[in-house]
Amino acid sequence: MSKAVKEIVSEIKETMNLRGGLKQVYFVACGGSKAAIFPGLYLLQSEAKSFGATTYTSNEFVHAAPKELDEQCIAVICSLKATPETVEAVKTANKAGAITIAMTGSMDTGMAKVGQYVVTYSNGDDQVYSNSNQANALRIGFELLHQIEGWENYQKAMDAYRYIDDIVMEGKKNCLAEAKEWAAKEKNEPVFYVLASGPNYGVAYSMCCCHFMEMQWKHAVCLHTGEYFHGPFETTDQNLSMILIMSEGRTRALDERCLRFLNTYAKNFIVIDFKKINKGRIDTAVAEFFNPVVLIPIERYYVAQMAEIRDHSMDERRYMWKVEY
Image (cartoon, rainbow, N blue to C red):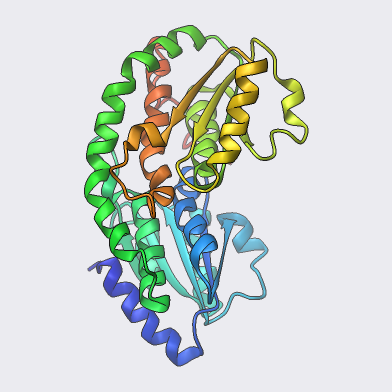
């Protein structure tokens, strides 16, 4: 039986107090799940004062586990259907003495069987976005901050969850015409650049690696808007297809700098802006952390319009689940 995140963190806190306190939180996953847990990582790296947070891709965590991994660590490990390397990552963390939280699609997966704690999340065509993997990675982070450090914005964060589903559904409705127009225009483009910063870097990763490359077999490049000006911007021209994902929060200045450059030197780009989609509903004190919870389903919606026009299903694969790899 799965427990609520609040209860899980409460039990973990008691255990950690007996072990000398929490030292480090590892967020471990691969592919879309790695993008999904990024919000929790970003939150803790930004706000935690007494413990650290970092991330690993599952198979690297198994083969090159950090020496620091021990009983004063938590490993938040995520996979919808429990890929083999992610199941092994849970076992690796267990063996090192860390407390494991397996985030997965159901209580029947291999991860659910080996995780010390299990958090299941909503998925599929009728996904409840306020209970998605992104939303739950954040919940874990918020509870750790609240219960261990008495984080001052906890209640504002909890209040924000009631807006998520409406914001996503409204965002899809409002962007549909633009998304269809973009998809029709760009359907034959060979390569896409996706730019983002701060909380949305995982969104850009998701759009590139999962939605363009995996689901549409399109080349895509994920770029940080702060790093764009340190080499990659030399490839910018009037034809290159680009998507700028703009954040609401502390790193928005990086995105705005990028937008100014694109307005001057580029032509073939679109902007997906959380601030315009949010419309002030999520409090500014915590809105930054909810960017990806809203924007991953929104950017996927754009690519889904391209899939429809190209008659290339988002579920079609050449290699995944079909060959040995």
